[in-house]
Each structure stands twice: as C-alpha cells, then as structure tokens.
Image (cartoon, rainbow over all chains, first blue to last red; front, top):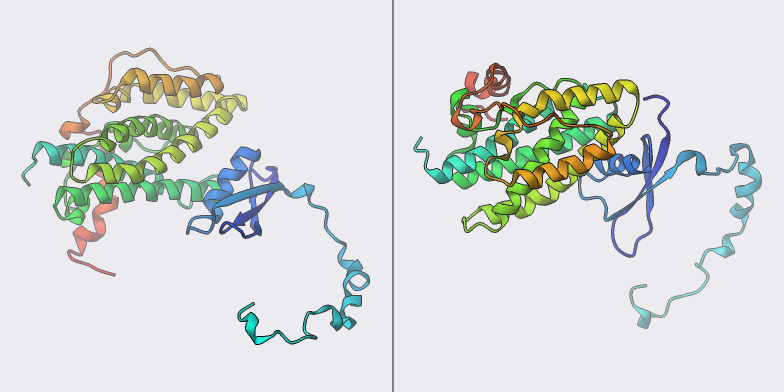
Length: 93
Length: 228
C-alpha cells in the first residue's frame, strides 16, 4: 500500500468554526480517504464535518523563502490591534 | 441460568455482536494499513458495545455472560465465529452479517420490548457505517486486481452456506437484494442457495468457537474477580 495516494484531512469541530488541518491518511480514492479520515481522526467526537484533499494538490511556500516572505512583518507592530482602548461599556469582546 | 424466550432472543443478538466483534479485534496489529486497522477496531468496539447493552438488558451479570459461558451456551450464528481468513474474507463476512443485522435492528426498533428500541437506535447508526465500509471495500476488491477478485469470490463461495441461519427471522429476499446490489458493482456473484450450515442458535458450534473463547476468557477464568 506504499504507493497509495496521500490525502490531507481537515475537520470542522463545530458549526461556525473553520475546517482545521489535523493530519493525513493513505487511501486509494476519495471515498475511502473520507472513511479513513473518519476512522483515524474522529474517534472521540472531534468533528461534525470532514474534508480530504489530495496532498499533491497543495501548493506550499518554499522554506528558503521564509525570510523574504515573513520577516518583514516582524517590524510592523502597528498592524496589531493594540493601540486603542476598548470602552468599558463594550464589555467582553 | 434460566433461559426465557426473551433472554434467548437477546443472547442471540448479543453473542453475534460479541463474537464477530472479537474476531474483528484480532486484526489489531495485523491489518494491511494503519487506517484500516483503526477502521476494523472501531467496528469491533461498536459491536462489543452493542453486545454489552444487550447483555445488560437480560438483567444477568454481563461479565458472566461474556466470560463464564462455555461454547454450547453461546447463541451466535456460526458465520460470526469463523476465523478471519484473508482481508477479503473479513470484509465479505462483514457485509453479509452487517446487512442482516441492519434488518434485525429495524424490527427491534419497533418492538414492544422494554430495552430493544433504545439499543436499536444506537446500533442502527453504527451498522449503517459498517455496511458502507464493507460494501465500498468489497466493490474495490471485486472490481480491483485479478488476485483481489479471486480472493473475494472465494470468500463469498466459502461464506454462503453460513448465510442460512443468518437470515432466520428476517426477510431473506430483502437481505439478498441488498447484497446483490453490492455484488453487481463488485463484479462478483454468489452461489445458489443450497444446503446450509446451522445450529449456532442452539449452541452447536464449529470447532473454532472454543479456541476463540479460550483466548477471550482466559483472564477472568484464571483470575476470578480480577479488576484493573
């Protein structure tokens, strides 16, 4: 089964939440990949919905580009919403 | 143990689930892939859970029923106790048995028994997945390679004489219709109904059940009352 395609698994835990990547499974086709994902990743009530995506359909950023892509944001703290005070009347936000 | 008709009926359902569940659990550590190992273990746990609920419904001590009865006191159908064979045999049996169980649970869901409808509500969701998993695998094995087709057909041929007692008490034509729909997609066939094995419900078992029970029961029999 080593030549069986790899699938990335995404689980949505509750209504209103986004699907979250949880891992991967090997399966011959999409139907069996969904069943494998169900059996491997939702054994303890983790989810209400499942996505499986062929791993080779994912386009990933190049690790050697990391500094170019992500370093520049380190010096731009003004992008974080921490420069104003929340009025007390707003309560929990 | 006083075996009233109700207890006998409950034990039939429960022993089918326990013995088949135990067989499926034997794949743990041996399944072809990690994914399938978990799938079979999940199904085994579903079945053992159904068995527990049914044993509890008898009002008798569930551990005694599972661990302290001898082969002739078990009421399961023979097909449940047959050794796993290869993966095709395990999957074909799962389809045949789960499809019959689904029909039995449908009847149980509307019975006037004090416990059965509630157990059936839980079991039917579980069995629906067992059927889907087994059917999807059997379609791929039957319509797969020459070897997987041959092994699946051999499994069906070997299992068929054990399907007679499987459909006692349910509508065999409904069961057969559901099975044939899968076999057609799997490019497999089933033998004509001929002489059928039987006796499981009366405690007349194959030589395999004693070996299964020896392994399943050794701990509580060697260490009575053990807890952990």
